[in-house]
Length: 323
Image (cartoon, rainbow, N blue to C red):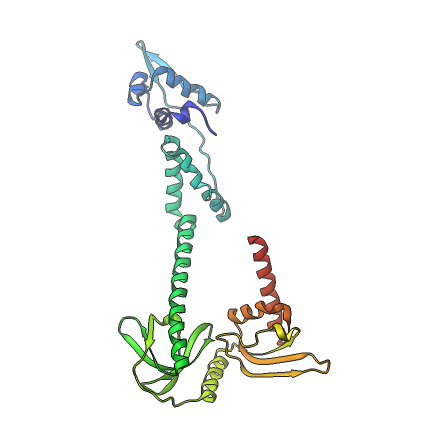
């Protein structure tokens, strides 16, 4: 905790700044009056500067004290790396403790000027943006969950759903599946107007409701599955996943919103359960596998097994950091 008259008394701090910037000699009393300080207070400043090997020169002319400019003072030049600047910036909130103090205003102005010159290194702007992104994601997740519920209801009732993207653009879709496709949760169904199979990313949907349009679907499960397989094949994310099931009774092999193409189950020569399906590689697949990791072993493909191992390690490291 700092505790010195020069730091505690704003008038003395302003006098120090003026003294540093003094370019020509000035009548001592005029200097004192200009800062509303007494001669004894100025002596406090003189004595304070002696600790930094700075001597205040005062002369006399015709019986009048004259204050001379300080000898040239060396300026401290500091170069910060990004990490060093962010570490310093993280301490800025602590400066609130000295709010109202003139010395605090000096450093606030200094650092503020540095931030203006380097806006890309503004720590608190970055933290604000991160919070805004988090809020936006939470709102989008809540909205998406509501839309998903409506579509799930329409799926169960086998009726069309009317969706909106933007205020005016709407589309009537007969829903067949909600699945993860090309990295997004999507509605796969039939465009009622054009009578074609289509997919619609739910994060692009602003609202949805049951449609009053009567419609008889033109496509069955086979065509829908073929459409999904074709889209995944074109994206290059389709994999044939083969798992050894260590604890069959404890594994959910039909995770919600995952399309498992051509699922197959058999027993190997040792009697172990082997499960296979065509899946889309991505975060949602790894999330599911992570939830059942203690009950499975990935047999194939080997590169996916390696990626999943890295995913597990990162998750466990993050869990330890939080703990």
